[in-house]
Image 1 (cartoon, rainbow, N blue to C red):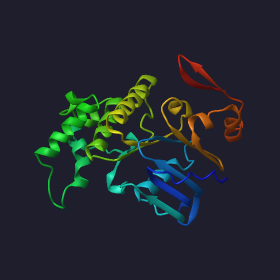
Image 2: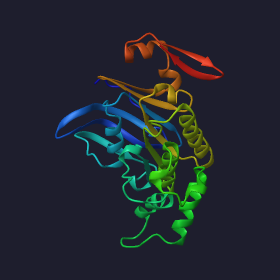
Image 3: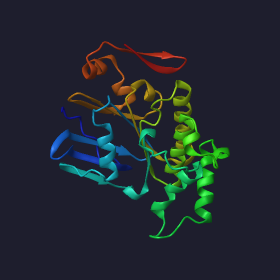
Image 4: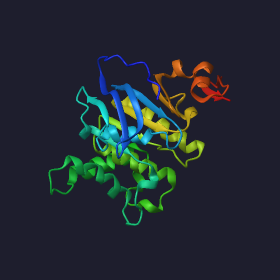
Length: 258
């Protein structure tokens, strides 16, 4: 994999990958990963299915140990302060759990061993459901909700853990355009209110063209890291994807046209 230019160790860096190789059973899936996620930013990771996006999230969460290199956590960004929003497909819907039950799960990592959630935990869970715009669904069964409502519940669960960094894995997968826009608008509002750092994984480059501060692009054996303005150019898009593309403005928004 081609190596990107290194991020400078700027003040406010929360997560730093230093020449990291990631893989399974000693077989590297990604190599020479050198980049940083900075405080308060919206950092997008964009690549096709199977490109290694979720592998990077697992490494950030400490679930996957690097085959080589080092991952640094600075500025108080310990893994205990991470909130994680998985793909809906990975949530077991067999149990008749309510939306509030699901969100309360976000509190478990903050509680002493053996202690059950108390009144304060329930109050925080209810507040986060309201924050996600679904406070009226607290008593509804999770499995009976629509796709967009389920994703908002998972979003509220992540926020209930009082995270400093929010990791989101294909959070709008399977949603229509209105649902995608609602989730991204929700993230934008949350960032403006709390200053939380967001790491957002998707296979849709257009989805983040108007929301992310910086991007990590993955395609085959190529990798590029930079600001949206630096990467969303015809030259870089051709280098990464081998297609002729242009970036246009439609109603004030960037749109990538191939």
